[in-house]
Length: 290
Image 1 (cartoon, helix red, strand yellow):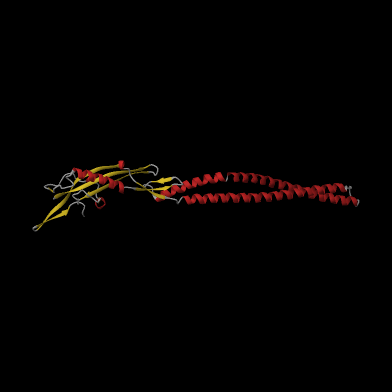
Image 2 (cartoon, helix red, strand yellow):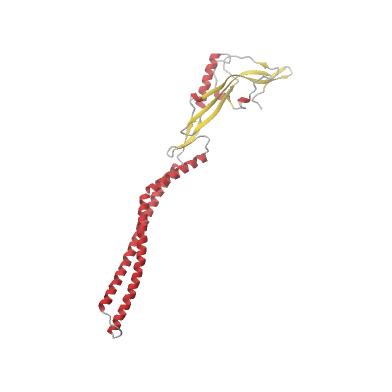
């Protein structure tokens, strides 16, 4: 086995934005086994996604050989510049996506699913809608309650007027019959004025019934108008808040440079198997290959 020098770099990145509910940590690493002597690295070409680096062996295999360390790995100035460049690459390429509904003031980090975020928005819109409906229909509700009370009293008064009219009609009929019988010489004589008086009382009772019926009809019309107004106000508010639920935007949350901690940066020895095939010696990767 022979170990060849590579550049291993790894950083822990914290992405924090309390407004959007983001508090995440990611790890970005690079394993560069093809180094330019001038210290130029295209980090995107060497992004590392293998086993966790805390499980990397720290002791070489028995009887292993080691390759030579060449520039830039043996140049302190170049390595310092490379580490700065690695940090800049991390800064430019590290982000998480948060969701925001600015009008509802609902924010969610990457740990919240789309369905969960939509539910939060729907709940917030529902609460706000109910509060606005209650506020804007309060005056209408007060008018409806007042008319309902008047309608209840008028309907009760109508029942009384109808009963009074029925009694007056009976009295008028009896008085008329007695007056006719008196004139014909049967029974006691009834004055005509008494019959007229009872007839007038019956007419007044009939007028009371008519007035109550008209009042009830008008109250019902007024109620219908107010109820329609209440429905229109509620429908407009419901549509407006309902449309806000879908006004979701995505925001890229990037780290601050102070939230990037480079915990590994230096030489890593990649193992290769030395296989003898006749007179030829072949190197086969012993790390990162199936």
